Image 1: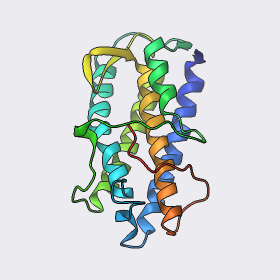
Image 2 (image 1 turned 180 degrees about the vertical axis):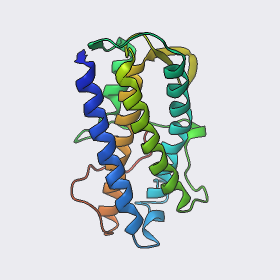
Image 3 (image 1 turned 90 degrees about the horizontal axis):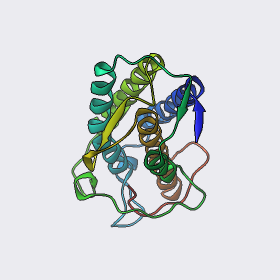
Image 4 (image 1 turned 60 degrees about the vertical axis):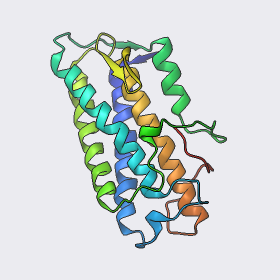
Length: 198
């Protein structure tokens, strides 16, 4: 799969801005809403965000390090790698989401959480926007990052951005469904998902 690098980054920036706008809207939720869950073994709003924060802790640092180390100039075309594209595509929200079990370290279910989780998530989205802007002068093909399950496996930076942001979008849809199903205030549009997903 090929993309114009500038267009890909622009699209990812717009998606991240949308995620940020939605996250800001969660600040106005009733006090109890962020801890509601569809059933005892599903994630709450805060648990979804904490899951994303744990991935963000790894990927934001990894992306920043690789960007700072690279001196290779940008390329007009980004060609997605086989593995990286598979990871990214698997994260895209779908009408019927495929179920995925998450790794234990990334599973925050029944963890004591508070509003700081939302603040951290918002802060991470601002960092992501800054990294996407920085990447405009870099080569999305040549820069590669380790992945959270193994630093021995590396994927192209363009695919890393896609994976992380699509993963965020996936769980934003999960949050929307939680809020809709628990009859809390929420923006329109949701995808049903009642299980923890990677």
